[in-house]
Amino acid sequence: MKSLAESFEIVRQQIADDCAKSARAADSVALLAVSKTRSADEVRAAADTGQTAFGENYLQEALEKIEVLNDLGLEWHFIGPIQSNKTRPIAENFAWVHSVDRLKIAQRLSSQRPHYATDLNICLQVNISAEEQKAGCSIAELPQLASEIAALPKICLRGLMVIPEATDDIELLRSRFRETADLLKQLQPDIPTLDTLSMGMSGDLDAAIAEGATIVRVGTALFGPRSYPKSNS
Image (cartoon, rainbow, N blue to C red):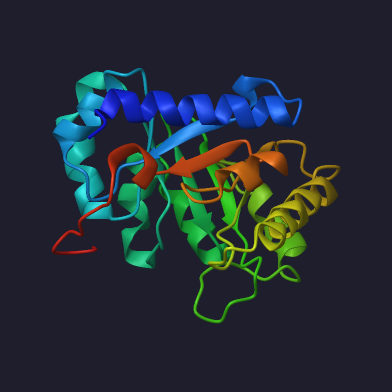
């Protein structure tokens, strides 16, 4: 079995190789280590490899890790579904939120962000594959939603996040990622803070990087197959 340090080195090298293939600078893609269901000790070990950004889906589990690992100065990203009654602790404890898909959630995050904190970085989740069971705003809703959210205080609208349909068709995946990149370009003239494409996971980061991803969200390739918490709250 590979050690955690070896797994991180392999993924970082893969990102660098994929960037080179696309004539991109290696530092143009940030690795977000998806640490949901992983213990605080595992996150600490990952931090020992130089990793500073971690993504969490389950709020209560994340808050426990944030408290225990406070000494490390890590950057925490919330990447899971957001319930209205959970926005305050997200606004208070995270640097990034990738999964905003409606105005109400953004408004609550804006009003609940502490006055002393820097602006909360937001990515809008777009349902790029138009799957009924999947979260995310529609492509048609995106321009107005982005405009309204960009105007909120204590929020910095940074980009778009997508999770395409599960498929082995690499060309289809690339087309989804390419469409997301095109959507970002269309919004940028009116929203100059937009600079982020959060797309690509363990199984499709090659395709995502080829189409312009700036953050790849990787869990399994770093930590191995995951277990699930007793509660997803």
